[in-house]
Image (cartoon, rainbow, N blue to C red):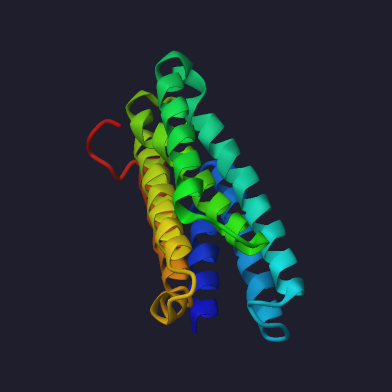
Length: 198
């Protein structure tokens, strides 16, 4: 069920995204979700094969996330530099707080730290955006901040059975709802459905 919800939401988001960078971001999320879920039919979460696929997928998603963040801050460089410095400091603090021990724990913590690094300047710089609509930039930042908060919580409670159960559905829900919302905003703006200026 989780797989069907994720694929449906990401497909709709990809289909209705008006910005090329968003379409690529949704497409890589969709491809990674499909590959990961298909692999789970054969291998478990703790298998080396799945871990390698997960690390490669997270890396691919981060490349497109970083490209979107770069697009959102391109025109506001002087005002965003303190936000970048602060977000890097918070991201490094997140790595320290979670005390990762094994490779997967480090990747989990780095995933959350990278989301946080992209979220803060995108959120705080959304008012000055010109490359993509401000509402989309703010929503991207909010999605990445939500993902970072979840990753921090999960990183702190990796051995908790409750968190492991939540990990089976909450990340999918966060990505699916966030991507649908961002695509909806983009579609409304492209069609002129918003009555007030961006």
